[in-house]
Image 1 (cartoon, rainbow, N blue to C red):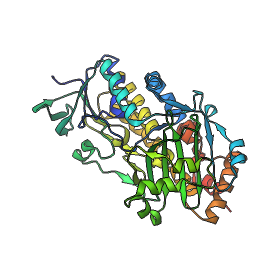
Image 2: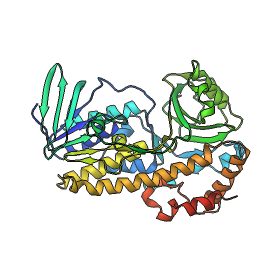
Image 3: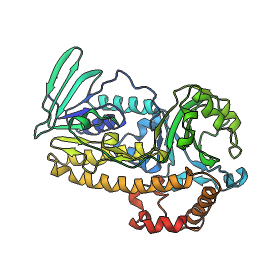
Image 4: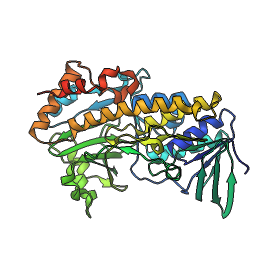
Length: 408
């Protein structure tokens, strides 16, 4: 095909969504994807309430619902600091955390990618996969070359949108260097089947001993398990038999149905990563804009990746459809993303101190801070996870606010 108006690199969540948003408005869009199909690699599958609202604004929420997205309307924090009955009495109705009123959503990552790709193609975008030998050059008229079906193609689109993930080839080719935090802990996940008793509308999290967990149900009897642990326990979860080790770790005293989870059947790989944030303050070059994880990613412990990506898509597509063309035209996108990521970075650091530092002193500190934030209503960044970082005042992310919550 000849050069499209917009070349999107990557057919994941961000690539499929932005291709849909632009193609449905009449732009010529082509998506280039190196894989021939999306596979389960333990990626984002939890959409915060504010992310659900972003999906709705783009016009993709109904498609997610039809694809099997499950609304999680109840959140229970089973934790070593509280007995199960009290935790259930204090359950949070996540429908109240954002004006959209839906709660959060759980959906398999591969399903979300396939759904967005299909909607993009339906809207008129062209999807080419698998492609190899991708090369991108920035410029007033950027250049893209690649091989598809054995044929070298060269394009000069008006704009290149890089949505090619954490290890972005485009970012490397353009010489962009990520800034990053120091690692604090490890985060891993695995999809399991055989837990039909787990309530489909309920997500749970908590900390016991040296283990922070999250349980996010999907359809029927499947749940996605997430685990956070320190470097002292890393070998336990990377050695052969790590899937069994992860399941055994869920046999927690504080967690009802923990024994049932421990007896579940793994149906996907267990993978883990260090938790640190990575970010670009300027995810732009001449003729090129980065979105989603390619532009930087938040600590996965607080599960903001999908929501961030959908906000990127909405902001960027609005600018493009309003005529943005130059690097200067896309500055508002970069500025808003920079502040969003900064606030979520502060939030993730605070959450990590609360939930992924272990021992008696850490448990007591967690109990104090959560009581102050949720019981006494002290200002805290926690609600940014659910309502969105822009909904809180700047003071929620200041050091003095966090110090007051954590004080002995």
